[in-house]
Length: 133
Figure 1: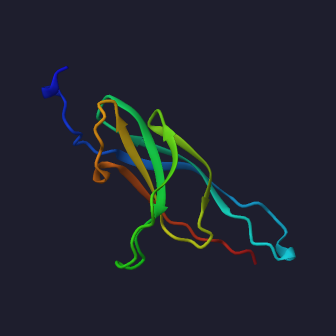
Figure 2 (figure 1 turned 45 degrees about the vertical axis):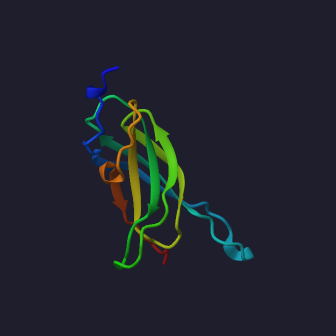
Figure 3 (figure 1 turned 30 degrees about the vertical axis):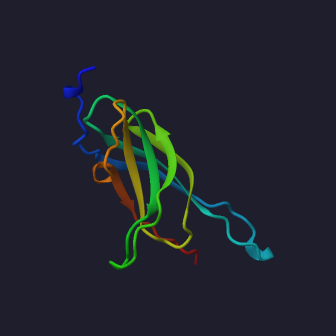
């Protein structure tokens, strides 16, 4: 094994984008006093990662920092694993009250090196509710 050829990654996940976004909420009858059905996100995430070879990618979500500087980001929650640079998020429950969500892509390398979080891909998604009149 050539140990000189092994080195920690220095390249970041690039160009994270979201496509084909669909928001779902079951049309339940809330007249019985039951809580409203959760809001769910369906979307396709795409990205580029120049480092080769990679094994797969882990995908996470968390509440983004803010709105003020003293409000920290929420905990990372893994939502899936991708074996290409494309992933379809399906039925992802999101907070009912609109908060910025951060979707993150962590590369997992074949060499076994951990990629620092600062090199992960990230996309912040903001949403709001439209009220029926």
